[in-house]
Length: 226
Ligand SMILES: *Cc1c(COP(=O)(O)O)cnc(C)c1O
Image 1: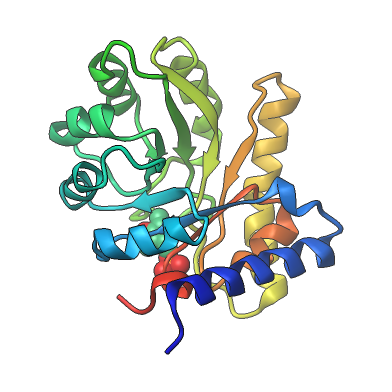
Image 2: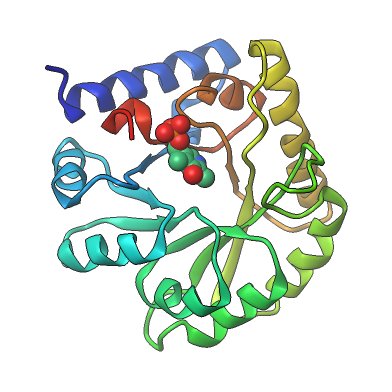
């Protein structure tokens, strides 16, 4: 049987190979282990194997795990959709949020971030495919939302997150990821100082790294099928 530690190592190997192919330093790509639907034991196994950052989609499920694993050196990232009535749980329990897609959610997270905790590290989720039903905001709306978020004292804007449509091949996947990269570069040219481009999952992390991802979010390839 392949263990979580084995699969983590294989994913690190893929990240390393993708970085070599792209002429990039592997230190410039962080691995976020997406542990949604898997229990605290799976998280503990990955932590023991050296993984420190974990991503969760479902707030209620995540909070159960976060509480169960309290005291361990884990950085928790919220990567799923956030309803207004869940912002308090997110503000109180997570270190990062990748899925900010409207000002109201950012304002609530800012107001509800507890005193004495580090600022919540946030990314704006952008819909680079133009699909109207998809999560994330349109690329042309990102600069305005970024400017508003930068005024919120308990949030720190780190970058962008995107989930491109599945692509038929490597070149097409790179082209989709390159749209997010172009937006990221344009915002930085305007002085935003962003350092995080969260893109790439089990199926497309190689293309995402080729296009400039700085954080890949990997679930299935580490923990198995959900
Ligand atoms: C589930 C999920 C992932 C991980 O996807 P895998 O294909 O299992 O690697 C990454 N990002 C988001 C936003 C997800 O919901």
